[in-house]
Length: 235
Image 1 (tube, rainbow, N blue to C red):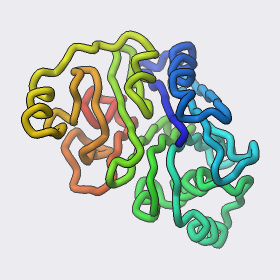
Image 2 (spheres, rainbow, N blue to C red):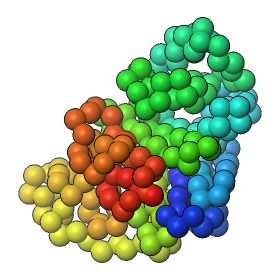
Image 3 (cartoon, one colour):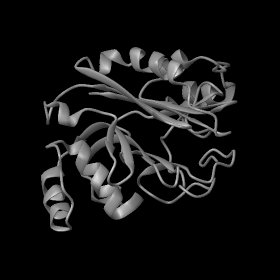
């Protein structure tokens, strides 16, 4: 199952690794086999691992590829990862693991955000580009793998579960009465980006990687590249 989490600051201050540690600990039931944290300046990722495909330490996350300048945390399963790996090897990419995690990492470098159009499976992942500072979050088309985010005064938090975000601290848990009304009336979360609490949002509707407008796309993105305070992008 696995669990992912992260913290990205708005003002360039170092990410809060103490808060991230609490988030990783709260995600322990999702990944009892291993855990890891990787911090680089204002970006920090955490992961809890359930070993399924690559049982070795080569599949450990957060997965860092220094050659490509990318760091990835991933929850899910990519069913066509062997076919994608063969295609990427044909492009000259070299692999150090047999995991589908590394296939996503290489696919992102090869095709950018369009890589999700090639992924067959269920997934939630975050990628950090070392050189540009960009962070991209993506979630599968049907939302099989959960991905939540919350904006604090110092930046944005994301995780596979709401309790993990709460563990970071500094979260406003006030109920959004409009969202609660829609849920009780229609038995579904609609409008307001599917949130009960004003502090939380779930990637259940398409988000443009470059603007705050809703994008006509199957995959959900939050681009942390422009860093303006909008629901979709941050700088």
